[in-house]
Every structure is written in C-alpha cells, then in structure tokens.
Length: 464
Image (cartoon, rainbow, N blue to C red; front, top):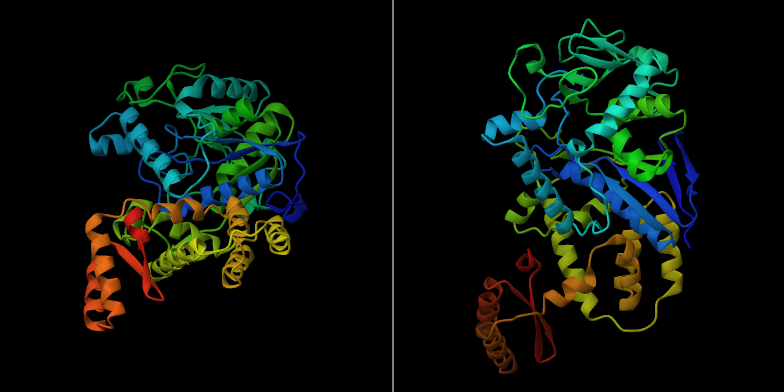
C-alpha cells in the first residue's frame, strides 16, 4: 500500500493523505463549462484527477468521484458581469442552450475516453438539474445574514467570512476590481460574488433561454453555488479532495469555501490540489493568438491522444508546461516505440524493486516525471511485461491494449507486400527491399527487422 503525500493548497504544505472514511475516498473535480470544446489546458486538470484516482485505488481504497457539468450560470467574467457562456454560444450557433450544452458535454466525454481517463462510475451532475439544491443553500445563507440583494441579484458578503481568501493565501485587500469590467457600485465589497442573478425578463427585458423561479424572483444561479450544492449532495461535507486548475484558486474555489462553510459551519474539503497552466509555444492560450488547441486538433495531426497524456506526465502537475507540436510529436514517437518494445518483453514475474521505487514516486505528491523516468529505465533494462503493466495501472498509457491493436486486422495485401519484402531481404536485393518498405509504411504500417524475417505492425496513428 502506498503512503500518499499531497501538496495541500489549503495549508501550503505537503501532508500525508488520510481519508475521512476508511477505504473510501470522496473526490470532487471541477468540471467543464459546456459551451465549447475543452482545450488541452482544460484537460490537464482531468489527467491530474485521473492519476490521483488511480494512485488512490492502487493503494487499496475505493474512490467516489464527482465531476460537475456547468451548463448554466458561468458568466464571461468571473466578476459576475457579461453574458452567460452557454447562452452566448447558443445565440452564436443558432441553437438552444440545451442542445449546446449536451453537444459539448458529449465532446468532453469523448476527450476523457481518448485520454484513457477512468469515468465509467464517475458521477457527472449537471447544474441545471440541481437548481433546487442550490436555492436551498442560498436560503440558508440569506437567513444567516451572509447574503444581500442588489438591483441585479443576490450577493454573498465576503466581509462576513473572516477567512475569505484562505485558499492559496489570497490577499483580498490587494485585489482590484474592475481591471477589465465596469465596477458594480452596488456591491458592498469588491470580492463579493453573485449567488443568484435576476433575469432581464423579470424587469420587462428579453427572456433568457434558461431561467427559474426563486424566492428572489425569476433568474439563474451564480456559477459558484453549483459546486457547493452538488458536492454536498453526492459526497457529503466535508469530503476528502477537491481539485482544479490554479485559475480557480483566487475566485471560484475561495467562493465555494466561503458559501459552504458559512452555510453549514464545517469545511468543504480537507485537501485541495491545483494543476499549473499550459502555455503554447511560450504564449498564453487565447483566441486572438489562434493557439487554443483541442484533443481533436491532435488527432487531425495524426498524434495519438495518449501521446499527449505521456507528454503531460513528463511534467509535475504543479509545474507550468510549454506545449509545442515538436514536443508532442516526439511523445507520439516515443509512445509508439515503447508499444513495440512492450510486445517483445518477457513474461517473467514483477520486478519488486522497480515497483517499490515507482510507488514511492507516485506517493510523493504524484511525481509522474520520476515515475516516467523509471518506466523508461524498465524498458531499457528489459523488465517483464508484468512490471510495465503494474506501472501502467497508474500511468494509464494502455500498453497492453495498444500492443494488441497494432497487430489486429492486417490486410492480405499488406501481408503479401511484407512476404515479398522478406524474400527480397533474403536475396539481398536491398533496393527492392527499401521500395517495398516505403510502400508498406504508406499504408500505415511499420516494420521491425529480425534476422531474415520482419515483424509487421500498424503505426500508432492508424489507431486514432
């Protein structure tokens, strides 16, 4: 069993992780806002969650996992201003909010599948299906004096929660409101945030695509309250671990903590983990730069999604990473090479010394770079298949599955070309041998020469 130490954003320290309930870990991972395709930076958060889940399960505990689907309430600005992202996307594409949300939700599930992220028994609650639970918490906050009304909604008064900003040790006094948006003069404090927003239809304006009745009038919930409501419903409060990207720390996650602790008087979660950003060619991802890439973009370039997973694991989750096409293409070639090598490994027992080192690396705040280095060393030393498979239970690179798939359904025509090339090699007709190799590779296959024979496999791109 692995002793797991995690860097807890809440305390700023690396701590031994101990679950609240014996043999069961309850984990909440901030999910996607389903108004567009998730980009590669978004997906880093779910790779972190997956490695964490696999490590916990490997150590012998069951994981109860919840990933929320934000299909309402996430405004363009974290400052509770601007359009709802779902509504804006629906208007742009000429579809209903429901259709937009379901389309991009399904795209997200496909990305999880492509990246071999475990999700069969994960709960994916939608914000729109938990309006009642959100309103119940808002009632409690109002009754306890933590909420106040303005002309555009119900807001949380952060000055009444003395620990506001404790996650990440955020200095609220130094934060400035209105850097990119117009200041809301009705807010008592710059850090106050919306719990419920009134619909324009409530004052004679245009009806929104998504709005509900509430004690405060027709409207829709703020972005933050959904996580408090759904995590409590499915995991209780407190639960064990909450994860997300570092961009969630200053606003979203501190708001979750504030409203949950003020409503119920107990912590929201004991451990908080946050992954760093991914830049692209040294630049921040942005639409203006045209450098927002998705898993589908990788596939269009014939790069297998698991190569992206391999590349991500080469950096620690708390370290920034710089995405380049050359880097991820290199990871693709490396993964392809490892799959071929895996097929040639022995069937001996697990190398216990290697696995003990591997477990210690993952137990030390999920140190995947060291774990990957050990994996490469295991391949170089030709450790057994069982050893690699044991490591892959956590790394999730799917060696067994991929090594099987690259040998399946090879066409008769390509087999005939292979046999013809084997004959040319025996006859030392090197020119013809090279010509046939090129022809075979154009069909999406690779050859590995061994003595007078060759081993034929599909290339990794053919499995996309």
